[in-house]
Length: 304
Image 1 (cartoon, rainbow, N blue to C red):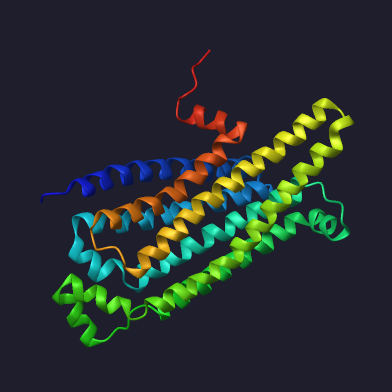
Image 2 (cartoon, rainbow, N blue to C red):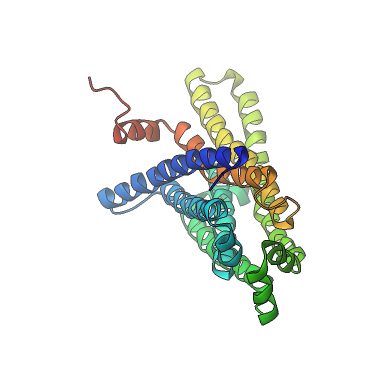
C-alpha cells in the first residue's frame, strides 16, 4: 500500500498528538486517583481536572480510531466508523470536554476573582456543591446532544446500505443529506462556550482591578495574587484558542467540503487532535505540583 506525502505526514503528526494526549491526560487521571486513594476525598479542582483528563482521553481515542481507519482501512472507515455508535461517542466526548472546561473556568472565576457582589460571594461559598451540580449537568447535556446527533445521522435504509457498499462517493453523498441538521445540533455548544468567555472576561477584569487596587499594598501579596490570576488566564485562554480551532475544523469536516483522504482532510483531523492534548499540556505546565509529579513519574528529574 503506497502512501502519499500528506498521508505520511498525517501519520507522524497524529502519532505524536496521540502519544502526547495519552501521556498528559493519563497523568491527570492517575495523579488525582492517587490523591483519592491516599486522602479518601478530592477537592473540587481535583475532581474537575480528573474529569477533564477522562473526557480528553476519550476524545483522543475516538479521533485516533477515526484517523487509523481512514488511513489504513478507508472502505471500513466509510462503512462503519461514521455509524451511530461512533457518532454518539464523538459528539459526547466533544461536548463533555467543552462543558468540563467551562466548569473549570467557572471554578477559577469564583476562586480567584476579587468581586464582592452578594450574588458572587453566595456562589463562591457554595462552590463545592455548585461544581458537583455543574458536572452532573454537563454529563446530562452531553448525552442529550450526542443522542440528538444520532437522530440526525444518515438514515438506515436498504437503499442507503446499497449505496454505502457501492463506492466511497455515494457513501458521502448519502451522509450529506442530514449534515445541516448535525451542524445545527452542534450550535448548542455555543452556550457553554459563551459561559466560558464570560468567566474569562471576568478574570481579566478582576486582574485589572487587582493590579490597580494593590498598588499600595504588600509587594508579596500582590505578586502571589497576580500570579494566580495569570496562571488561571493562561489555562483558560489557551483552552479557548485550542477549542476554537477544534470547533472550526470539526464544523468544516462535517460539511464534507474537503475531498476524502486529501491534504485538507488530513489537516482537519490533525487540528482536531491537537485540542485534547494541547490544553492538558498547558494545565500541567501552569501547575508546579503537577510539573514535579510529572518529572518524578517519568523519571525526568535527576536524583540528587
